[in-house]
Length: 129
Image (tube, rainbow, N blue to C red; front, side):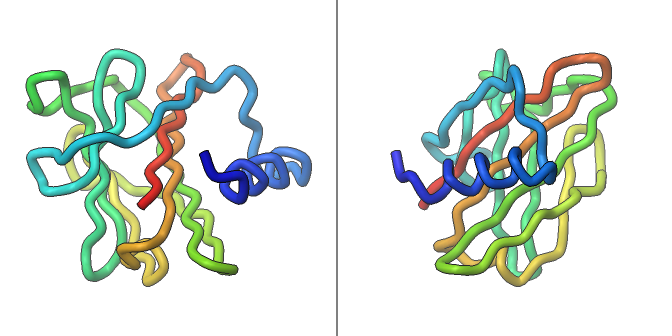
């Protein structure tokens, strides 16, 4: 594991920018049905796809089909070299969210997705390239 990404999380938590108590963390593995990286997240998968304009996420089940966790919000922390962005993702379909960001479109950028299902603890999935 690389420490800069975790240092970033610690700094954000201390600065009040992000509270990550009782968050389950998982790491990326494999390729998903939309061509992106897959990360496991407490009974389902999160796929991130870096597009020419930013970042898309898809919630999918073990069979790589659409998965619904009910209402949720999603944010992402994107880091590459000495640049960092905090993104709020917006829905573009059931279990699908996106954000425009030149930094997130960078294939080498590291991404942490934080899902906040209604009335449940946040779920964090890390994607490092």
